[in-house]
Length: 379
Ligand code: TTP
Ligand code: MG
Image (tube, rainbow, N blue to C red; front, side, top):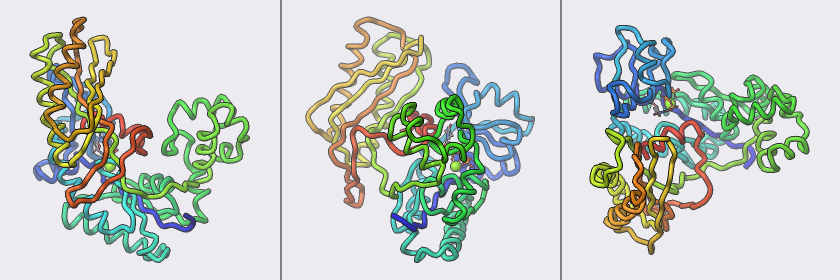
């Protein structure tokens, strides 16, 4: 595991850049891609903004209403076009995979590549490969990306974000400690605001203090695994391998046009989500056991009802079970605001080329929390 060359590649303002390419008249303008909830004209949040719009303070997660106040008269607001971005993403991921010894996609626009063997562990060759990949993405899709090159995934991830957009940052082993020490604790990938607040309570305020921290004290606060993980991050150590991403669940969720407890109205909406889910089931040739209905009521309380069936790949089962689960939920009618559908508990995944992907049922995906939450709406 020692002496690896790992790339982390993240596309720049991905959805907005794709939209700009599709509509050349948008070039040079602030562009904001929005997830409209469909409730009132401007309810919803910003999915992403191009760098011009970010100069105005508009970024992912900002409510659309606020973004419209921040925007100037040139600013263009457009709805997400997920199916289109997914197609572009798929082509880019295939291209990246072709440049890697080992490949791991972590979200729609980012991936890790282990290129130790093909670069003979030589950072000059790695740099050339980085520029070759950038050129290939630019030539085939017209998009820019940022690349971090480092001895492990964690440092590569920090490096790709270091010079955005269109950056390429190389952190050799001997520079890792200095590089990591230049961040605030809460900026380290995978350390949230809550953890950094707890660290401050323990008197740990900088990455250097964390690295020299008392393991016993950290363990008493966070437990053994997390304490070791925190020390590892502060030292820029990450032994996790680059490995193909495994899918543990597929879900689709959305907001109803109006709050309602009417079975027919809700099921009509669910039917649309089921269509999308079935499309994925067929595409991935998944065998699944568990079907779930997710309901968020008007007080924003979330409830999940699940049923497990004998292993199946018959998509019609999804419809039948969800109908039953919704009927059960509405036995005590409660107005519903958002609904979602999910399948999980997979047996095996066979890709289109017959490749079998690993599945896992209990551990979580190694995706940043930020992205995980934003993608639950799409995937
Ligand atoms: P990111 O890579 O986090 O963001 P980005 O590509 O737009 O910008 P950057 O140059 O900083 O990498 O996410 C990739 C896409 O995921 C983004 O284009 C839109 C979508 N997304 C959301 O829909 N909601 C979110 O909260 C985030 C962070 C991203
Ligand atoms: Mg990105």
